[in-house]
Image: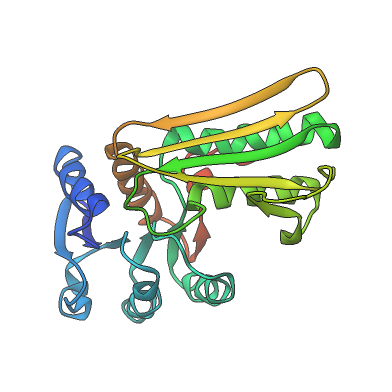
Amino acid sequence: MSLSVLINGAKGRMGQALIKAAKELDLAVAAAIDQGDNPATVITRCDVIVDFSSPAATGPLLELAVAHRKAMVIGTTGHPAPSKAELLKLASRVPCVWAGNFSVGVNLLFALTRRATAALGTGYDIEVVEMHHRFKKDAPSGTAERLLEVILEERKLGADALRHGRRGITGERQPTEVGVHALRGGDVVGDHTVIFAGLGERVELSHKASDRAIFARGALRAAQWVSEQKPGVYDMQDVLGLKG
């Protein structure tokens, strides 16, 4: 029997891409809802909830998923850190894939960034640059946030090491700094580059997305995978077997 998904945020760009990708992958769309709709009226029809909507919608939807024991895929970004920590606790009560980016290529970028950060060491300065379309509401992107998490984890640094752009007399760059820069304009689907700048050489890891369909296909791949998992919070590294 085909997996049945409930798509929340159906009127958005990702929602529309998910509906199209579901048809391509022969998955059933139990319901496609958006702001103003009541998910409680349709949740029993689905196997997995796929949410690409707004940060405010995540909590109520997770509570509903827990109450009905439904697996969930969360691609919504922009949650404040304190509330995200509480949401992750709630998400752990059901099988849940939570990721800032569902592209297979981007998740390979995460793995390569971790390896490069460990291999190159503190002699290389790291800067993360991302660019998205003019309509994106949050910055930096969820993908950039995850790249930064990977870098900080490997270097054993806290969030206070981040430098969100620079202005004025900032002084010399400190070896513990990790720069992050968010560019916005036009119809850019999503570009991300991690720069490792050493003395005499520079290594750059980049991913450029040209079609939103890659994220939709990845999210639905995650939905198929998570439908067979035990309760817990997973990411696309788990889905793709890139951990370990």
